[in-house]
Structure formats: structure tokens, C-alpha cells
Length: 215
Image 1: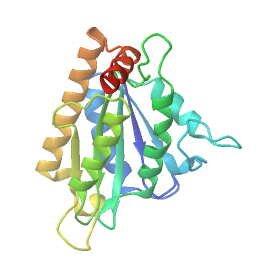
Image 2: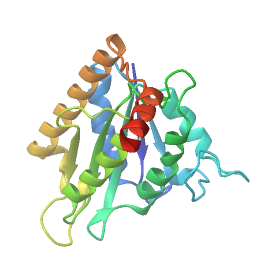
Image 3: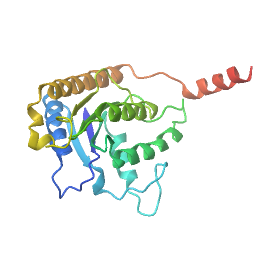
Image 4: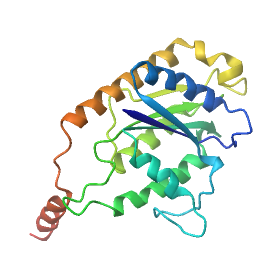
């Protein structure tokens, strides 16, 4: 099985990222459960603004989308800026809208059906739960399955201060407990969906909804 992390920091790989340090600890837990991991830093790619799966003219979002197609589990990780998720992860959510226009021919399911997702948020100010709520909604709407406790966060003490690395966030018991729950529950659900995938016929239900709405 494979898990893909999308690091939605504002920094390129040449810069130190607290979010990357946070991801590294979760990656080790996946590895301990025999899950292969890959980490992608979104800012290293030329991703255009838009809501389709390919905005053309050098857009590199299709490369990211291909990685998502080839993974079993997706973890979106973001720092907090001004009490909210980063602009980078908002752009990712906008680009994922294209998924909803690309259901398969047989039953209309998106390729994300039977894929599992989780969320990681870090920073040195409040806003983690708000960010998680927004991201989880986006992931669910885009077709991912969200297991119980599929998130972990670290924000330190209220107000400006040290972030994950400097603050020793890797030793924070609550954060580590949530990280363990997130990873273990994601792996459990991913295995369950491999054995018992969704049978939802999206096209059939769309027709039924149209009939219900016209009666």
C-alpha cells in the first residue's frame, strides 16, 4: 500500500519546513505499518490557478494528479497563516474540483472513490480546527473516504512563538497520539475498501435525483 503526502507549505524544498518535519514523523508510522510513502512539496511545481485537471501552458498539476491516482491514501499537510490554512492548500482544493467532472464511464464514480485521506496542520497560532474542518469537507466532496480521527495538529502556545521544530512538537503527547490514530485508522480503512469497494452507481442516483425533483 502507498500513502502520498502533499506538503502545502509556502516554502520551496531549498528552505526548511516545519510542515515537512511534521510529515516525516507521520511517514515513519506509515512505514512501520508496511506502507510506502512519498512526499511532494507543492511549491516546487508550476501549478496554475483554476478548477480543471489541466490548465495547459506548462501547468504541472497533472503530474500531482497522477500521483494521487496511484496512491491508496492521501494526506494533506498545511501550516496555519493568519488563523487559517495556507493559500497553497486552498489552490490544491480548487484544482481538485476537476475530479468531480471525471467520473468513470461505467457508474460515474470519481477515481478518488475507495481512496482514504487525512489531514495534518501545524503552526504557532490558533486556527487548526477551522483549517481541518475546511480541508476534511473538501476531501469528502472530492470523493475521498475519511476515517475516524483522521487528523493531527500542532500549534503550540497561543500567540507568536516557536513552530514545530524549534518547539519540540515531536514530543507533544496529544499531537503524537492523534498522529498514531490518524495513520492506523487510515490504513485500516484503506484495507477495508480494497476488500469491499463502494458499489455506488453515481449515474443511476443522479437520474433518480432528477426524477425525484421533477415529480
